[in-house]
Image (cartoon, rainbow, N blue to C red; front, top):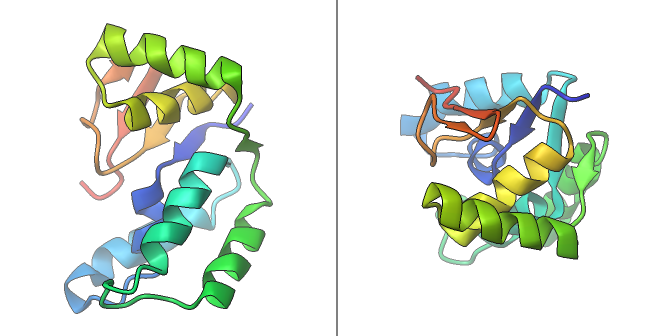
Length: 137
């Protein structure tokens, strides 16, 4: 069982070049360096798209983003499946989340994660036994 699921924002902060986000970069890097992390294909896809976006001030190259993704494959990664999608649809309606956030919760739950590290969801919120933790607070 893995203890924490990482949302895309954690991965993105780990590569930020924004001077205002140095503390968040350091915290995100420390979190990623821990063992008990998990991800989903959705999170890795979102990371790639956002990290390489041409309008991003500190965009990384395809090669850099792909190499980072390869290193993060050391963690359990939940595939996008029909079962995950179906669970996400249930969670979306039951907990008033966006579909994409609900899919993150569904993936985390499928991997047995007790926590989701995310700056984008409500800190402390318990969603069917999985708690949102903002590691930057």
